[in-house]
Length: 409
Image 1 (cartoon, rainbow, N blue to C red):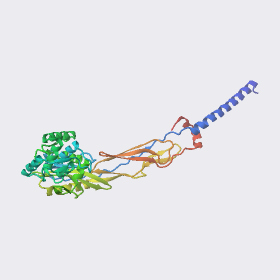
Image 2 (cartoon, helix red, strand yellow):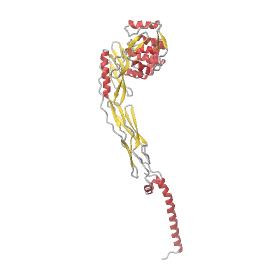
Image 3 (cartoon, helix red, strand yellow):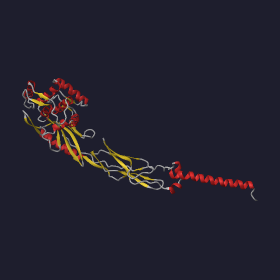
């Protein structure tokens, strides 16, 4: 049956408008697909697992009290003996030095104010000499700088100059003792008690753990750290003064202070090398039989510490820690940007946390995230970079994937 004129007209309209809509749709579809951003590609994470190193083996002295720590590492590496306070003897002079320097600070190389010795200082000398304390000679009218008094107190361990320095700094012994106790409280050193400037009184006592903290504070003061590392020096009116610490220069020892009453004490510091790193140790031995015995024990403590630290490889540059595969089949990796190691004590566990950004299009070498290694109090962060450029999929893929318009993955 032939179509009517009206039916023919209607079909023509449908064809014309259909074609028009198709053309218009194509005009809209082309730029939408060709210029729409591609969807994000998730990172597939591959976190590394680090084997736990071997535990450290330590054997500290069985007498008195001892402890050792490494600066930058949590807590003590090891300790032995009593945890009760023991007489510090001349280790007390470290408290005297730090308390005085807080009130009268010095820079390295700075002599400080001049201090004239009086008959009172001669009296301190005679008093300590009568009590068989360690002294260096003094005469009324002699003039020393603050730095020189610190050297006389810390290097040959002159008791009389510890009192001369403290009384000069604070006006009286009682005023000094009040300041020293405030200083100890401010630094959380409740395990240390001072009743004099020199430690000749056994009432000046401390726990081994708090003395290790005191040693760390001493090393933070560059003037004290320099003086206690000095084997010997020469001063006017006194001559050559030798350090009482006979371990200086042995096993990396570079401080800090001896002490002798009924027992032998040494608050020590040493620098050891572990792999490519230097580790600063601080330790103490209290109430040993004699200085020869505790010096041998301290050498052993340092050697044990050296053996107990491990330099652990964490990652090498180029290691794949995350990977990407785009919807159009392109593959790329997020890789470590550099080598990294960490030095740990004993069997400290090491964990790794990887974070990597999602990507759309990205250039080779762009930073995408990081891997953070945690070992005790230490963290090591290594950036992640893209191994190769992720390029646009091109027009043919885009035209065949209309879902790109709606941001579908």
